[in-house]
Length: 317
Image 1 (tube, rainbow, N blue to C red):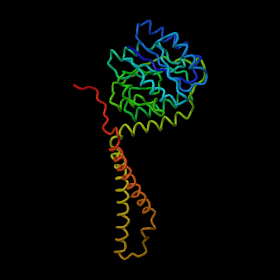
Image 2 (cartoon, rainbow, N blue to C red):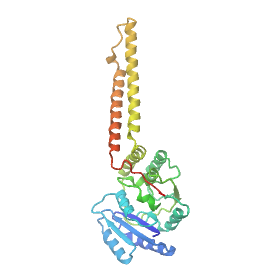
Image 3 (spheres, rainbow, N blue to C red):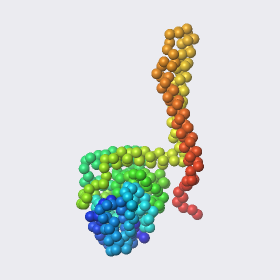
């Protein structure tokens, strides 16, 4: 099979027939073998009934319905488990992504031998309250991930080699950072393509301002897990050792200074425990010890984890 199209959705009953007909027309024009997988993320507007009607009209349609709303990441992860196509295309169900982009994205994956192509909606029709925070998060993600050639990590329109989606796990709110997850999994042929962004035709957006806070926390989580999952002691141990050493040096200086002062016969100097710097040093020593123990315990947990030696193997001979 050439292409699998994965479409997560929540209350998009109005747009689904038009989106399906558009995708079908594009696939038929280019003679692709394909499947369209709709993931109903707990809709309450009759979206599932529409999917069942589309399935009756087109055998290439597949549907998965969640009992309740779990979020876009969960929908994508379940969709990725179900795909069979050589190239996987993800897109939103609100008609803001154009199916006419599919042949170009497919060509980039197949001809350029890329792992992932992320869409860049260079000209957007979103309000400024959404575009400015999005730019800030994209900047922060580029800096932390080292993927400097992407402008829009959160674009729903993406193309993947099947191996990519079969070897990554998307959970929480991680769908915003799939290129980062793919990079940490060893898929580094990641590029970008300018795509059309269309104004919403039906319904309202399903995302609120809390997505920006969640997105930042997820970025930190991806960075930490990707870099230190197999070696947590390197993170906690390094910070703990620096904190302990700094506190020890400060304490040694204060005590040494006190002893030198007493040796010179100056009995009016302050006691060690009367100096605020002493308590700062004490806190640093305690924090350093706790961080070191945290790293040690995390290392024990990692070593006893069932997937401690679960490494992705691309080829064998």
